[in-house]
Length: 68
Image: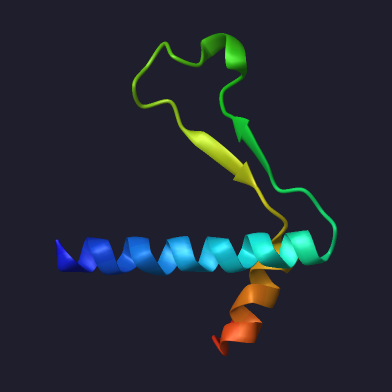
């Protein structure tokens, strides 16, 4: 349980930093349901796909001092 909480905290923090990088670059981070909206809600396990740019994620990791 502690490992899951640590992983979730890391990912949330990383995505927050990624979002800040996108805002700084005047880009909009979009959340798009996958599969298309017509099939959303038909299954409780319908995944949500986040379309953030890899360069924002790479910048956030580089600013944190993490290796890419």
